[in-house]
Image (cartoon, rainbow, N blue to C red):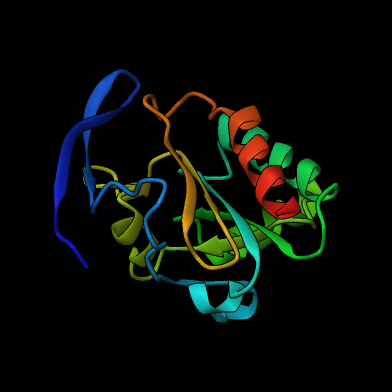
Length: 175
């Protein structure tokens, strides 16, 4: 894991923050990570081998923009082929993610918790040093595990470019 810090890469409520980890760009191999899924099961990149993957990164599903982002990608996931995985990664505890997904009826996405080790946050350069939350971002990976799209949302409290991410995802899913 890199201990690289990127200052002023993004803002939170217009205040500059520090992101820990490298900036991931299209064309790179997607870094591995270890997070917790349902039932506290460890989940890694290997679990998605051969799938096109959209990774929606949010600070917490219990905030308005994060909730809308998660619901939007869940809605889109229902229209995608079975070989496409849509993930939501946050620092929320697995129990909070399960509660949220049940209440919000977001059964088409896979919620993942980075709470234990911040493995995903450090590997993908989205760990906010000052808050120990994840910055808002979206990544699209092809079935070979290569990054096709990476967006670090400049202001954490605003929405990502849904259309651009979904366009890349859908183009990759057809390929």
